[in-house]
Image 1 (spheres, rainbow, N blue to C red):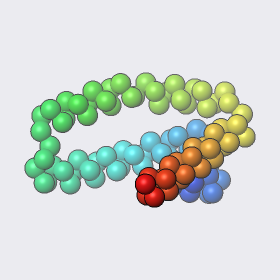
Image 2: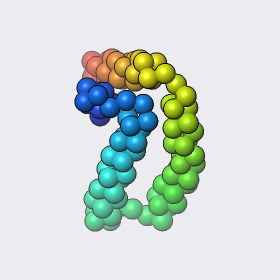
Image 3: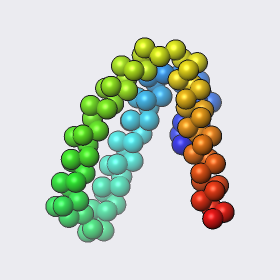
Length: 97
């Protein structure tokens, strides 16, 4: 969520936001795998589940790219603003609960 705010503040729009977010997610995923692997908490079941999630989610990235390319930039920006705003509200609500 903070990443979306930073990307939008930097002027990144449309598919660039999705691509940058995907690239950062890959790097974060590699770091997580390394840390949890060194801690010895990754099992074969965890790896299988992660591969399944990745296999199912991969087509979604291409669908999102096609969808965003056809969407006006101002509408995509408004959607991202709403996601960041509602995410922040839910974080504050969760903290106060």
